[in-house]
Image (tube, rainbow, N blue to C red):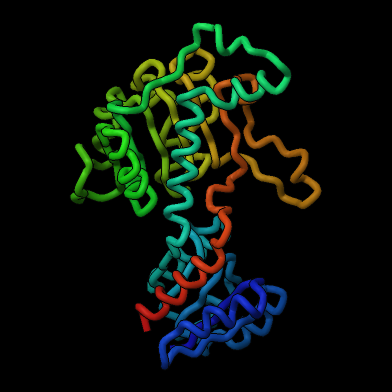
Length: 313
């Protein structure tokens, strides 16, 4: 089996993956800067590992069977191409499952306990959060709704059981899951939304999920709900979220996924992440899509990629 590793990763990382591959797997590294070489050699490969793959490569890769994405989800640039090459088996690396689940819980606890708002005031000597009547939310024994029950959603549920929570989950297809009080599909969403004290979104960005949480869904939610999003920003309708925060229906939102991202290095210091002014609310926590930015993650990612490639040889 011949694999193209199409990435800007350095040679040390490539060698790390190569050293962990089973016999019979031949892997070649070509950086995106040399895309012409990749296109010219496309017919050699059975597997490509990477993202933002040139369409010309896919057209000429007549022997290609697997498209391995070294992270969760699909890059927007790849999605239209993959639709046109339905014979390819698309696989994701889930190396970041624990990292994202931990970050999601950090966001939920920070939102429920009003940590960021209190922190900002205490930095300037303002003790009023201690004496005001804005109380924190209890987590233990409450109901958690996980929308997007894949590997990350499952890990979030495992942690929720420590808090003795009632756990509801929604996934794309029907199935079973141990340790979950209810598992349904999108058809069941409206019936479980009113039950949730906390909602965690772990959904990919697709045509089906865009705007999935909109005005109707917010109207169905319980007063004082807290929402965490570690999936993709457009899953939530921005204006509907703004209105729900303004009315008090949503007591807190903690977001690690956004609607607007900087397009250049210069823009990284001056790009507001939404089209609505979520910064008006002290109960919105901003996180710059960094849930998986954890020390040691690259070694974990490379081991996961090697294991994935060994599984399909």
